[in-house]
Amino acid sequence: MPIKIQALKLAVLFPVLALIILPNQSTANAGFFDWINSGSSDASAVTIGNAGWTFEEIRNKSIQTIMQTVAVNDNIPVNQVEEPKIQYKVISETTRQVTAYNVGDPYQTDSTPCIGAYSKVNLCDEIAKGVNVCAANFVRLGTRLLIVLDADQNFECIVWDRMNSRYKDRVDIAMGLSEKIEARQFGRQKLKVQIMEKDADQEIPL
Image (tube, rainbow, N blue to C red; front, side, top):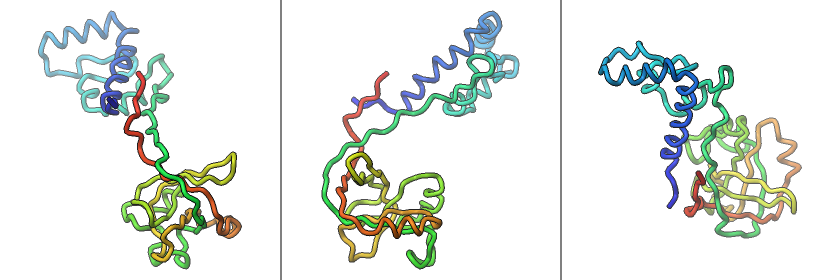
């Protein structure tokens, strides 16, 4: 049965807190049990390890913040802990015409050139962040497509935009406003396009 991401976060948090407490057993652990037994509401009386956080502060921090900022060994932050990446599987593959366009250009889009079919996503911001975006009409918004460019190179993108309704089977790759030459050079190609979905059978190893 797939393991919930939240449960995994909790599993990661406990050893992190243990690493904070153990190097300072004589003070932190004793303080912890004294604080628990006393029933005191004065959380400022106890701090944990090198992080210098009170219990009240830890309770109010997100797990991600704790994992990213707590020092395990003095000056080494725990910023290498990442959530497991979601795995996708291919559910179909067809050969389609693939083109490219430039987000942010009203002549290629409309009067709101950075806003596509899904208004909550700013396409210009996504491209600037390095997110691969494309437009297509044959799948739901948010679907991931894998475009096979050649034997050694694939292009994975997320569908956040639509094309003109007459292009029912085409994929349009979104490029930045400064990449007009690249978009023209890409031209119109016939390429294999794979539709992907989340792997429901994915198990997150412990």
